[in-house]
Length: 234
Image (cartoon, rainbow, N blue to C red; front, top):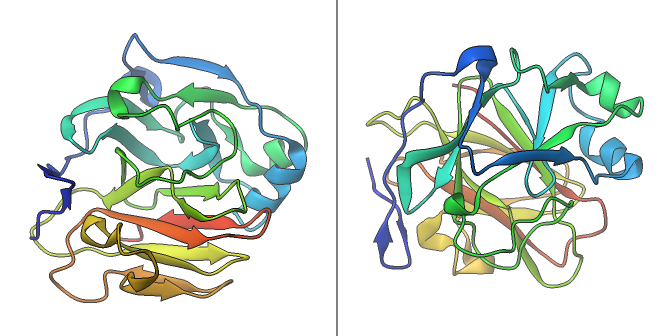
């Protein structure tokens, strides 16, 4: 398995942690806050999801479903957030959120990020992600790009769990606008990224061996309301 690098630091791959009581655990420094996501954006972001799926919102306006672990890519073994939307009392069904019910935002502690760009509002970011989201089997994350100006990265890097010595792809979907996807070796290459996904289409990343197990996606001047969905279908 290729070990991806971010700047000069090596990414340590992460195994799924044992879930806490109720399917949710988080360090004491973390908190939950009321969602600041408006219903118009909810509709754009959640409209294509299965209405009976249970979801939770995490920092950055990203909705997650299933077993999810969040850590810092530079310290991946130190898990900052572990949750399971199937058993977490804070989670709600997609249809409930679309009907106007609010979600508490699970705030990712600063220990999981190395800059303050990860906000609790709907927004992508202009720099590569430093927060790593590990997706269990069947889990997914969906977010929007927020700003329509310049290059925007997903707020999180993603990897499938359990981690394997073989390459296991993640399923990337480009919502309303084309994007690139790839491991951290390509995050600085922008339009030279290895996987180009046109609007409304999807791609398994990687589709060949040697591309590592940690991926992100990015777009150039995306249209309002556009975004991405990442699923672990292994």
